[in-house]
Every structure is written in C-alpha cells, then in structure tokens.
Image (cartoon, rainbow, N blue to C red; front, side, top):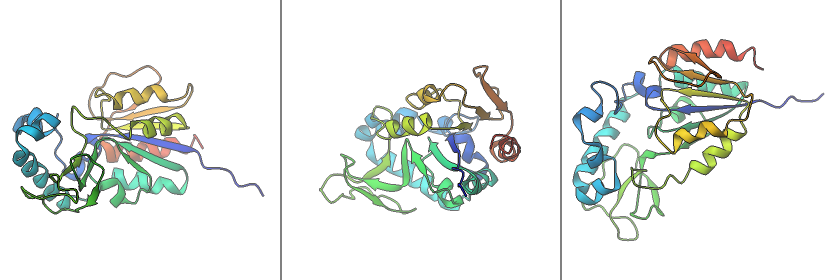
Length: 231
C-alpha cells in the first residue's frame, strides 16, 4: 500500500500571531513603537550608541515572554503537523510556536531566549534570564541579544525562501509583509499555490490571496476547515 506524502504547508507569521498571547507589538496603537525609538532599541547603531538601554529593553521582553502562553492559533498550527508537513517562517523573536508544539520554525529576526557574541558566531541559550551590562561571551566580546536588528544581514532568509518555494499552501498571519527582506518571500511562492492571509486589519493584497479578516486564533479555526478541502 502506497503511503501518500503529506502536503507542505508553510506559515509566514508576524507580530499579530502573538498579540493574543499578550506580546506587545511595535506598530499597533499602544505598541512598543510609542514607548521606544526603534532606532535606539532595534538597530545595530542603537547597540553601539547605548548597549545598556538595549539590554534593559530585551530583558523586559524576556520577562514578558516568560509570562505569556501560546494562544489557540499557535496550537492549531502545531496540531496541523498530524496532517501536513508544516514549516513556519516567523518574524517573531518569541518561542511561542515551539512551546505550542511546532517542530520546524525558522526565525528570521533571531530568538529572544538566546544570546550571542558580537560576531554572532557563539550562540547560547539563556532562557528568560537577563543579560547584565558587562557580561562577556567566550571570546571576550560583549554578550548581546541574539536578535537581527535593522542594519544587519538576515542570515536565515535564503533557507526561508527555499522553504516557501516548496510550499503546496502558504498562510500569512499577523504581518502586513511590508518589511523587507521578509516581504520578498511572497515572490517565491509557486504559481497556482493557494495563499491565505489571516489578519483583522485592512491589508492590501494581490487578487490571488484569500483574506480571512480575523485575529490569529479565530482565523486559524476558519482556515482549518478550508484546508480539509485542499488535501
């Protein structure tokens, strides 16, 4: 008896994916953008200008993440691994996809629960612990958050593009796909492959994208039913 191969389902997720879990977003009203200057806390120039501020900012983010739990949307994506080969390409630096049970997650912008040396050649798991001013990596350089900031290369973008190019279905959740290079991933979707967008906001999309105008958890419930007809 021939075993039917699972279809490849690729999710592209952004801040809206984790918003229901209480993770503050930058761009929404009341988000981090209003409390912090992005150039000071999310750029390589900010790191060189005021590393102590950046350490405090990401220490706060880890405290927030430790209290957060995966939402229903995260859990449904993880459950879909029973029926599909699921890969996630996320712009989020939280670990909520992994904690929900997803096994293949590509983090474009780094991971909050990891630290690294200045050259990013030494990466360590720190969990939700703080990085203190003066903490050093093994090579003697300053220990810093393992985050891809504005002004830095995105080393996982090629792997992400390859993953998207193999998808049988693509689902975009909680991201407007306006920030490059992540926004360019949509161009790697093969012609004829179904594309779904789950977002409660009004987002401009090409005509071939099916929009589910809901937050992540509700949208994933709707999508789960739609996927039954694509298998």
